[in-house]
Length: 388
Image 1 (cartoon, rainbow, N blue to C red):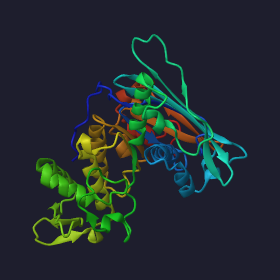
Image 2 (cartoon, one colour; image 1 turned 90 degrees about the horizontal axis):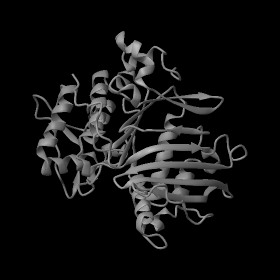
Image 3 (cartoon, rainbow, N blue to C red; image 1 turned 45 degrees about the horizontal axis):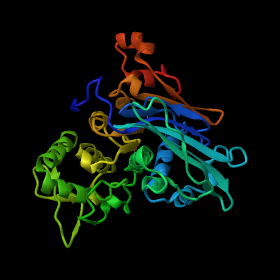
């Protein structure tokens, strides 16, 4: 049975979070706008509706701001033409604007990426601004140089021609968007990172593919045993054969192994089911202390291969993580949707090749809730627009 650790409906807003976003021209996202993003946002919709495209957009932000590798991201994703809605002849550029809430006020960031020869994207416009309480109005947009291959926000955050509130705004934007990490634990093949020896020192954060899970767990076992023990107990509730992990450092490396109940035998990742490996990674990730989490967690179909009871547990752990970090989840599982409030859902559907988004107010469906329906029921029974 899943734990009930959801934050209250009136949980305070995070001190730093993405408040709204508008995207034009990225893949199927011809023109979408999402406002008032909650601590946890759950994207639901049929296959091909654009959920993963929105996740990939945030991944692109991280690539272009964390390591300044927009060009590499585009190349790995099939080239610039594939990133543009219906290709470059129909849509020559991508436009985006994000509003970010911080303790100091609101910061806005916008940019335009245009197709260029050799099938790449270049910045033709990039700017930012801040709004501070007591100023009376928004400060003007601060324009960065155009026609550059990588984001110039990095230089703006370091000072240079900007100082005071503008430099602080650039730093706040950069810090938050650099920390957007997409977690997808789908690769459980024989060559999966889960099944490799890993450096014990690589344990500051869980990697997006989960390959350093053993190193992260070993750190928790050594530095925060009560939390490590809680993770083991929660896994054991869903996987009755599981007792605890068996993590032994050898020559600076560690492998993912676990001990079964009632036996001294231990099992490696290569003898562990795909769903169990994903469950190990999800529970560990969602229990990590704030200092070991990125600013924004993005989870793409976390329910894949999990038992319905495990899916429910993961949903409650996602809400738990949403107390300290912003979380965006893409799913099709009614049992996961059931955990969340209607105002936390965004339904995505595809019409004429482009993605539409719809947000909800509980007032629209109060009669259904009074009749005993859950959010998952509304999705599964076709009472929300955009479902299969």
